[in-house]
Amino acid sequence: MFWVGFPLAIAVSLLLVPAGARGLRDAGLVRKNYRGALVAFPLGAVLATAALVTLAPLAFLNDRAGIDLLKPELRQWLPYLLGIAFLGFLDDALGRGEAVATPRGWRGHWAALRAGSLSTGAIKAVGALALAAYVVSGRGLESWRYIADVALLILATNLGNLLDLRPGRAEKGLALLAVGLCLGAWTFAPLELLGIFAGPVLVGAWLTLGERAMLGDTGSNLIGAIAGVWLLTVLGGDGRLVALAVVVVLTIYGELRSISATIESVPPLRWLDSLGRA
Image (tube, rainbow, N blue to C red; front, side, top):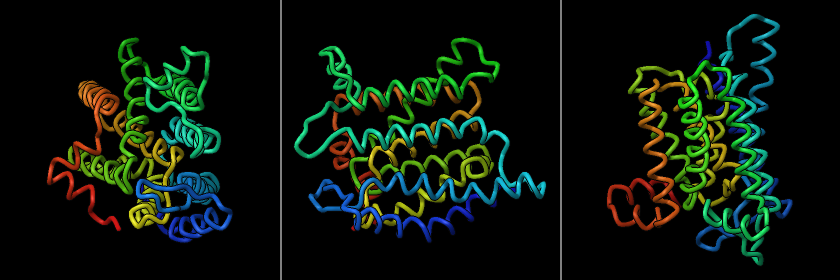
């Protein structure tokens, strides 16, 4: 009955996520989006909270009633998902205001570090590395495969941030990955493992596409972390190496070129990117 978490998370999120977005706006927690509209920010904090609210009854019934509602492997990956959300929230809260120019991307953070400044983005990167090294350990991997899996998890997490330049883009990327993994492996394992996180992301996409809220690094990095965990848990050894090569190429491209400009120049990608957007 591991699949119960996903629909329950959607039900919980339908109650909490819109209310949470209103709460952010009422508290003055807003930020201008790419069109200059003020939207609730960061929605990712609400999504992580909705996942935790869903987790509570599932964990209680899993332990007290002996009903298998949570995959045992969730214990391994939960510290990474929640830790990444926290690091993203730290970056959202302290990282950059409209009047402060701060470094973006790996090159920007490295340049700031060489200049003697440790940005919140750099702190997030170091924290993500530590978390990834921890959760990937203990799986009996050869040294080089361990390093490759750590790199895949970190780069997939960062890719969520690179995609989140337009409303709903990161969520669509996660949905496409879920469909591809489920169909390719003929399994619902991704939703069974992380359905409590995927549900809030799905509901939150309704708000981001409608330009009522913005994920922030809290949400985009959480989405990337979900994608990374899915890749590590569904794919075999060779498949993970292929996935690592893909995310490396996408990361380098995102650092050197504009992903948004590329999407705009390809009609099918432009149509998919704008689908459902206000």
